[in-house]
Length: 125
Image 1: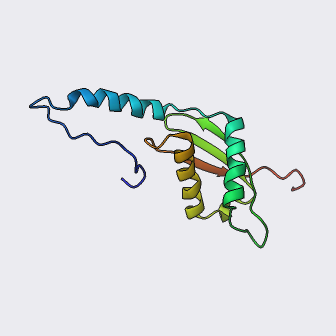
Image 2: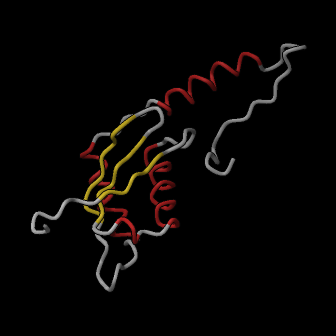
């Protein structure tokens, strides 16, 4: 399962009763990661650091700014990130953001959804 590289695997035997007790511990750990909530302030400080370390690719010769990010849902953790030009963000950069979220906020054992959005232009018709 490429989407969940850190998923815990338990080899156990129901017939002999080996390692059955470890199953509940692992389930509770995964459940905790599934219900993770990260504050918007922490996420916005985090996204500024991510952008300074590895900026988003240019869009039509202009910088594609990562404006801000917010967690909009848990179960699974779902994040919305406002970007200048969301259609110009490649899949590799989106995976980079998701993997960095996993590492920095310790939510590696659950799937993460990242939605790219743009703000409405008040000057457009």
